[in-house]
Length: 484
Image (cartoon, rainbow, N blue to C red; front, side):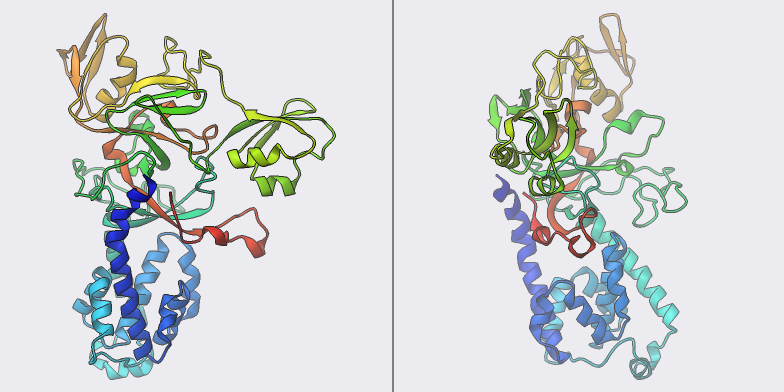
């Protein structure tokens, strides 16, 4: 399932990437550099800066999400100018259609390296284009902002992992690329917004958008549906009716794994997920809480053990009883330590009611490890409305599908008219974090509507461990790792 979900993405992007790299290879050779330098991530940008004579400190800005898009495009523009491609049309197509024009120029015998585009000699040679450095960079930045906005809105966007809810599949400090084309790009619903600021302006803390104009939900065609097992980025659905209301596309971005798709019946029993009465395998690198008992003679959970087994949220209840979050593999390794007597999942018993768990109704004595069955709504599905179904579907009908719902006695009014059933207008999904006992997800707030879906997480391009020593903060084993 995971491999099949990536086939479409790589069928499209793989050949395009090869074309771009082949074009860079030839252009590097035209500039007197070895072609293989074009294949080395980050280093190829260093070479491009050298060839255009731009300051090398610009590479540091590549570490800043959002800004890195602008800088990368600026480096590309300076680079292609060094080959005489100085017209606005040439600059535009190099940014928006690099898979066509980079290889075209690379293999074109008439295209040659004419000198560093940021040098005085270059400006003198192209005196009709001579501009002050400030004006030149202002134009480049404005163009880069427009191009980067189009790219991140319709094709690919960078995200970071701020919390541990997906560990150890995705780690705090992972920098991700999220594909908009897999499910189809959602067009902006709040079109007037400050570039690269999601909902709040940095420094001032004020709104980064104006909601005086709102557009209806529309999604461009994609080449796949959201599938069970996909790591999905979506807008947090719970604040839609709160005093802190933001438009749908300006809600916080969350990332979870899709466990249920429209029309599925989902159930949890002692922490295990069943979809349509079939057991779904837990994510191989997912975590959950375990209860650990020692014989009291060991050295406890020292830093070395915590790091090697990736133990987190360790709590001590007695001198020998602990709980900690870890993967199943780490649990098996922990059992081999001589002073460990028992390691077992710390799951709640069936029938123990947790009021924070969906649908927040004491008639359903559910908790985060035991709930369901629940039918996930799909577009066109009609549900009977009564006292047993309203706790599950009222929010979707009222908040997500914008209806006025009133319950009077045993009757239900929708937009002022008596209704004994409702037909859904959207598809819905069930999302859960891989770190099952440290994740706020559909177990607590229910369904995720289709208009909240942002995209599919496809690649970890950088991973930064803030808690490691300064010389090993980069998790090199995670750099450019495909997300399963």
